[in-house]
Amino acid sequence: MNQLDPTNGKHYFFAGGGTGGHIYPALAVAEQITRKADGSSVLFFCSSRDIDARILSQSGYEFLPLPAVGLSLYPVRLMQFCLQLLKSYYFVKHVLMAYRRNAVVIATGGFVSAPVVFAAKALKIPVYLINVDTVPGKANRLLARYAKKIFVQFEQSKEYSPNRQVEIVGCPLRSDFQNPDRHKAFSDLALEEDKKVLLVTGASSGAANINDAMLSILSELSNFSDDWQIVHLTGMLHIDEVKRAIEGLDITYHAVDYYDDMPSLLAAADIVVGRAGAVSVAEFAAVGVPAVCLPYPYHKDNHQYKNAQVLVDAGAAIIVDDNVDSPTQTANDLLAVLKDLMANESKRQTMATAAKNIGTTTAADQIAKMID
Image (cartoon, rainbow, N blue to C red; front, top):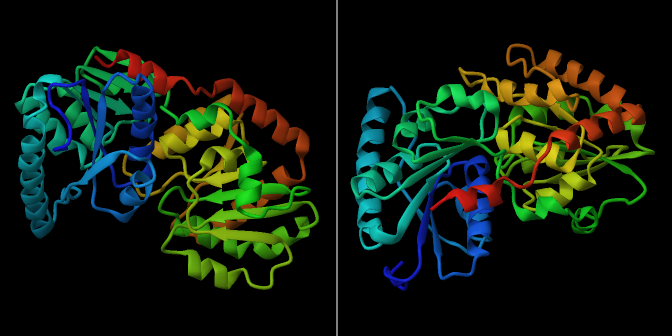
């Protein structure tokens, strides 16, 4: 940030990374902030994971990867966590020092947020927290006490915050979600215009369990080959495995490692199968697509299940348990739900309408206006 004048405009520092779920809400708010065209600057502190660089390098914003790592109670990893936390803290504090009089920190959670928030508090820089999960993660629960305001997606999230300055605004989504262009996805991925789209996604990093379940039921889904095609976002680590498994299929199958324009792809979808991260469920609702959610099964607080339940209660989604002890059961349950939905247009339309009724695309703009 040496090219910036610390005395000119306001400087917004975003903290979060490791997954798209931490980065995309921040990008949505940054987009609204930079629309003011008042000389403000934006910089992201992110993790050193490949997914962060892949997303942020396309955004046009400057970003600085931190060596911070996730918390682990194993002695060696705990020591690494502490050392990297301190290293990141001092690095961030050095960066923020020159801008402290005109700076704001906006954190979205995760292990990257902690050293940035701690450095901000040491320099008396205002901190805002964005929490989009129904149940805040460990980092957000820890950092909530330092926040001037906390922005949440769900009413249920308020009970987890000791801070009374909680604003229920929804999940910040990129402006492209306000008017998504479904035809762009059809063009980019060479989809067939006369066929419906079943979209399968494991979010930004992919989901091995969902991939495995889908691959095991493909022969059954081939019965829908006349009317349906499948787009499968496999994750970068799984693309080769999936491509080998789909060779010779009857049903049209597009395996893609990653696709950034989720607004257009979700708008093109007639059904989406995926995890239930907070950003994902917000995107499903904003576009109005019927969802089959397989919540991530390894979180102790089961927060993805609670995220998905919001859609289910509205009539916009169906939950299929990712049964890690019985992958066959997961696949069978998923197949039963998909066969029913793919054959029932009326049910899909009802779910789509229900999703649209609870979706919102205004959160990013609201947050940008409330940050001072």
